[in-house]
Length: 354
Image 1 (cartoon, rainbow, N blue to C red):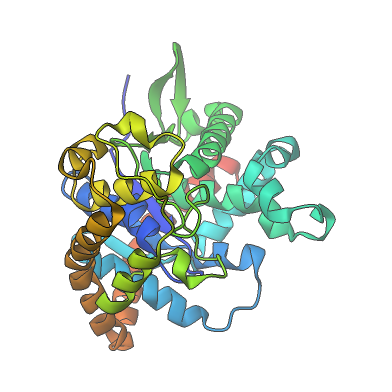
Image 2: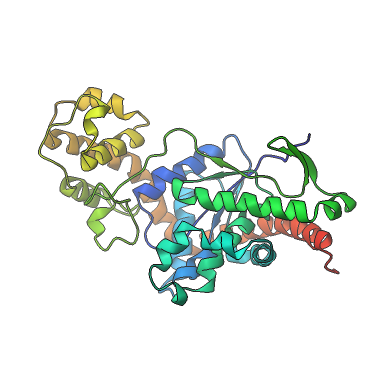
């Protein structure tokens, strides 16, 4: 049995300010993966218009995400950094996948139910169909691995379903065109054009919660700016937010078990652990029995130490939009060449005359 060449794809939506949760949960992983994989990192601006069509400053948001990628350590020359709308093959393959995917599959997507809320009939068609665009984002490069959080696992399963249905429906045509690879799916041999993409969930993903409510995820859309640490926050702002973060009156426990039922304490210890590349148990060895009046200043020092270089470089890059745009153009051209190779083959497989 053959195998597809390993390739990592991931994207970040240009909506709202990037925060500590985005950095620890996604961007820092992107940086680490470039040591071992061929990587394509995308600012998914087509996705940004699914829930909100008109944006005040979409170009600024796109440039901000790009600046964060580079400031965190992603190398746009060794790998590819671009914005999705520069490569029209994403939308072309998404249309084909709209015809592969079934309405029942889309209706089961929990994120659509969450985002559409009670007024489903008034949600955009794009919001319902955007998982097939996500599948196209990944498969237009025939990527094999995607670093994902828990909230995107269902969409990755859908991507696999779409790839499998396309492979099965067109298997004879794929073979006749001299394309594809024999792979095992479970115990079954399949002649596949698209790979069965795998999630990359390495180690315990830090789940960063709101500084105002330890039961809710840190979010760009939370109305309170005190609920999150933005990547563009300066040292003074980071300090203020951590010092004002919600806690409980008890001292920190000596064991991880003691964090149960204490969501705010658990969150702050988890942030400290993630920023210092240690386990929660390790952190509690140092701080068990201490009050938050001792722990919070240590967390402030650590957060500023880790985030200040990223913050400074982001600000520098955002002061040079011409450079950022040149990175996106170069990445778009290189991504487009790869995407067009896939699309030429897909058009042949389907039978479009070109």
